[in-house]
Length: 97
Image (cartoon, rainbow, N blue to C red; front, top):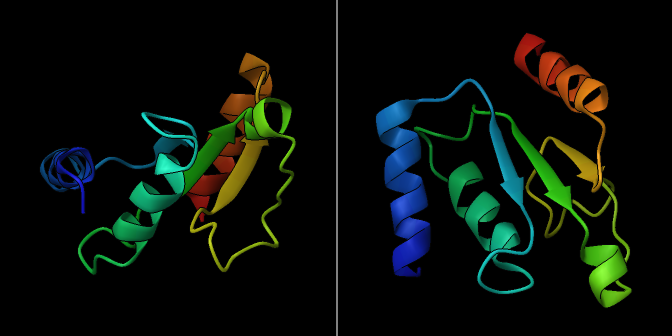
């Protein structure tokens, strides 16, 4: 684990958010995948829904979907840019689960 992913995990444990909105591309083009994997494999955090936001498709040409669960450990996925109303709708659905 990287120091940054440890920091993200510690923040989630301290704050206990209702939902986590996570970008795929952080310091690297795939760091969001790593962070979500660690969060979802942590028993104290795995119940927190993760909305993964990304523009990785336009940046890299790589297209993925929620069906790619082997490496996408998120509860929902949204392509950027996203409208505020679409973002709110996705968050509401995740919080109600």
